Amino acid sequence: MPNFELHSHKQIIKHREVVADDWSVLKLAEDGTPETVEVPAGKIIVPLKVWQAQREDLLARAGRRELGIWFASDELAGTVKDDLDKFAVVAIDFPKFTDGRGYSIAYNLRKRLGYAGELRAIGDVLRDQLFQMYRCGFDAYATRQDRNIHDALQGLTVFSETYQAAVDTPLPLFRRHARGALPEHSDVGAGI
Image 1 (tube, one colour):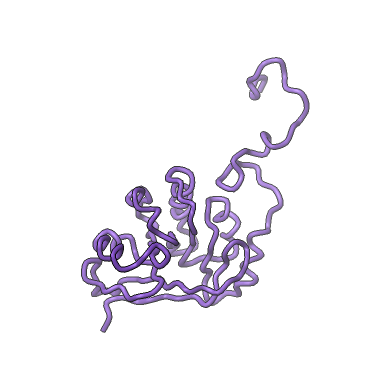
Image 2 (cartoon, rainbow, N blue to C red):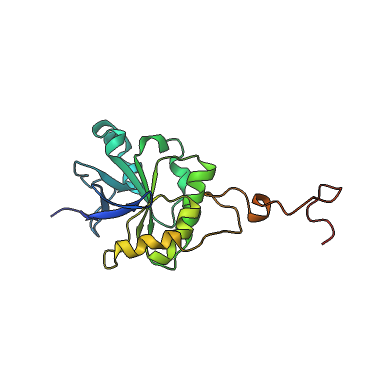
C-alpha cells in the first residue's frame, strides 16, 4: 500500500483560461514520511518536506519540466530560495477558505524572491478568492472540484479598478492617475 496520495485535476485555470492539467499533487498518507515516500514518475508536485528530504534524488531523476513543489500554509518560501529555478510549478496549499497565509507566501515568492514560473493555488480554492490571489502573484488555480471551474474563472474579473499596490499593479491608484498640478512642495501628503 502506498504511503502517499495523488490528487489530480482534469482542468485548472491558468493565465485566465481553463486548460487541461497534467500535474498531480503528492500528499503524504498518515504512515508516510518525507524520507521514505517513493515519488512516482511523471509531473508531480511534491511537499516541501519531501523536497528537503530527497532533494538530490529528485534532481537526478526529473528535469525542471517535471518537478514541482508545494508549500503548506505554515511554511516559509525562503527555505528554497536558492532552488526556485529548479521548479516548473510552485503551489501553495489553502487548507481552508479562511486561511490567508498563502497570500503572503505568494507575495514573498514573487516580490522578494523573484520567482517567475507558474505559481498555483491548491486546496480550498474558491471563486471569491481568485481576484486577490491574482493580485498576490498567482497565475494558476486548481479550484475545488465540487464547484464549476468556468464560474470560478469569472472571479478574476470581478473588479475593474484597485486602490492599493500589489504584485499585479505596483503603483496605488493615486499614483496611476494624475489629479492636476502638485503643490509647490513634493510632499503629497502635506496639508492633511
